[in-house]
Length: 405
Image (cartoon, rainbow, N blue to C red; front, top):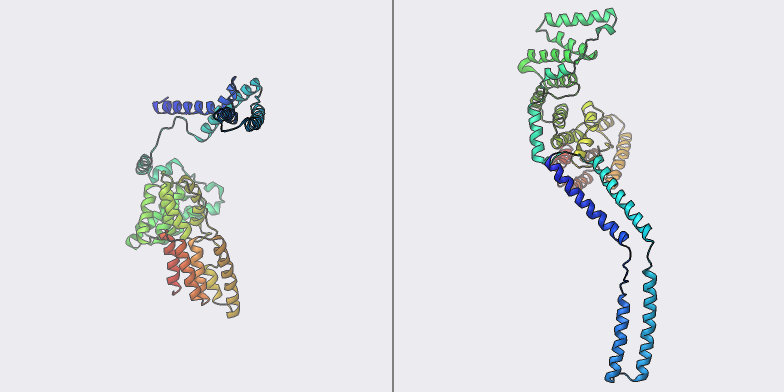
């Protein structure tokens, strides 16, 4: 048992003893043998003595003094009777039994809470130390090939019929016999990924990136990034992180790269950075896409680690696709459809509020309907609501600029 835990246990024990003493002392002691006199009784006794002094000084005559004594004595008897009623004592045995039960309950309850919610033997870990530990873990984490070796994917060609097996083998041989043939490697990537051979697919996609050199595209790198993480069963290696950073240097708003960067931080005890990156995925990405859904399934747990009650927003209202489809409709039908969606969205934002994406949608939709002044009013309201959130304000202002406001 280390010294820190010993000190903690001693402090906890002393506090528990004080808490128990405060609760059970009145029950254990019961009523004192000498009943404390009521304050009212003391006052009335002093008044009787004062009457005698007033009579001696001649302030009161005998008749007035007797009448005053009678009234004070009546009040004194009433106060004494009330005090006796209030001061009735409970049975001592019952009081002490209750004190013992409460003591046991306090000790058992405190112990159960600590062992359920606490971490016995776990020392203090300041935030700076946790960040340093996370950074050290990040710098020394396993490389791509090490992670793949720790989670190998067996080649399962035996599950296919002879014709399919021969086709797969032929595509593998063709790619290796023609090392500069991008088409052969792309076909091999698709084949290996389709049968779950992500590690083989990663090698093939890596070969494509090498062949293209300076002509490699963001899509090529994004495909490689997906395959690298899939081949390690969800682990973001240093090499995968490097690919994500390369993508972000070219496309700072690339949703897959942002997601994987956030995943890397989440895996290395940096929920603060993971949440910031994943929040941008939720606010900028499209619901229903792979990386958006992956983020939506994890961001609330990361927020909980930060002590935040974050809920993935409900993305309702007309989307960009809805507005594009409306362009081909008859003017009356188009206006009716958009007005209905806009009305529902506006009512919800007015009563329940919503994320900046929904306010941006409302602004864009109002602009499509030609209600520019209303759109500007909504923009001003959104800026007031999200005034302290630079990212949110940027989203609604961007929507206003794109709408020509």
